[in-house]
Figure 1 (tube, rainbow, N blue to C red):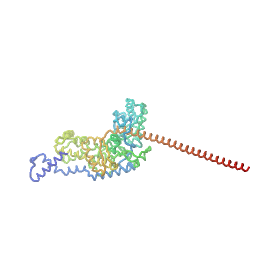
Figure 2 (figure 1 turned 135 degrees about the vertical axis):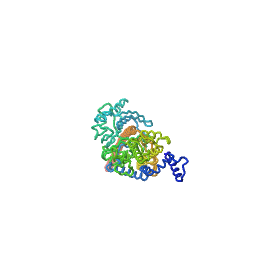
Figure 3 (figure 1 turned 180 degrees about the vertical axis):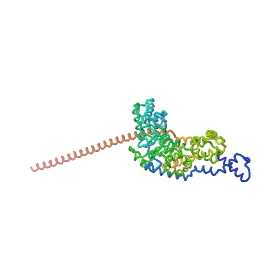
Figure 4 (figure 1 turned 135 degrees about the horizontal axis):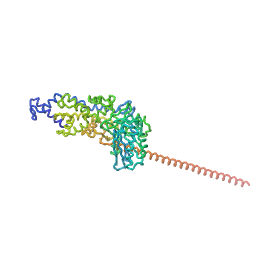
Length: 567
């Protein structure tokens, strides 16, 4: 950015002196700077118009926030039938409170990788974890569903047996990164496979039941699958554990995996998504379709905000380049916000802009390269590497241009390439900030905590600063927030949710036991009260009998004395 500022200063100096017929003291009659400034003057309208498409005013962002909030309300009420934001129930009722204790297992199945983690928790002590990672073999991924889940069960059993935990019946949290229709904490029907998995006999089946059946077939260990989760909910839970039980929003900003199944929709992977705690009274659609009773006041909601804009309600934030990327994607018109924010499309957006600038001879003298004109040859990591460059050196930028086959690039070309990366990625950060501010304005708690995970947020050198800066501009007056970076929601988050479920169950059992004790005590007290009443009644009857006998005796005695006197 300092390079652009320096260029602007020199350009204005050159223009000022040129208008007076003077030469710049730092340049001769035909210096490269003078030529570059002249070229920029000729093409400024084209360059400015290209960059202007990616610059969104706060008015536009607040319009987006209003539309997002409306979609969230309709998603809670009616699901995807009336909204592009699904607002899926997670059935997770609480965040960790520091009282979780014991050993818990997390299983994370996503893409072609499987991970098993053991977590040990003790209040007041650091979390202890051990894990095992493996790559799913092709025979499991492309064979029968029974073979796939048998492989998963075997990995779990081997892991627990090696640690002599086979018979402990440990609670398991299962992160399953494929599209599902979840109707309970441990109940979800697989809608379709993605990411290259084609195992037969699984679609339409309850994945928790498939796993439990496989563990039973193996027969070597005893476990209890207590929760099926996604990584966004796990991110929120993991951050809350680190923050002493406090986290208001969990956010993921990373690379996308697009998943869609008509009206029922759930996304996986690390695109962009968010979760937050919502009142159970507002979760009308999700709880209406639940297969189990839910008796808690609150629930973590998996927003699935990546679908915002799928019905065209956000066309005003799309550029011509976004529309090109969408039209050539595997799922056009689906997961619109994901494509605007997450890292998967950011690099391709930059490439399209660079290609257009080359066509108009604003960049690389109109030459470019064949690779630059080829789709998906500018990965998002290039953006981070270019923006990590030290000003004036640009070693990363030079290397990237070599990889793209671009020759003869000038210093001004490198500055403009950097500026394109800044403008495109800052638009992504501003959209992410608007989405986060929208949820913060709904949550409205003091000193709100936002936990963010994802490769785009983690590796881009300015993303965090831009997001924080824009949220402060968009947040309602009187509200405040803090952002923390977190990670491993699919692993630690899954184990922590298993711990929360176990704690809540233990607390509920204790509550019911205490209620039973109170009931018994109340019954005993009532019995004692009735006995006391009965005793008092008997004593009163006894006193009445004695009084009656005494009175009868006195009457008889008086009659006898009267008789004797008459005699």
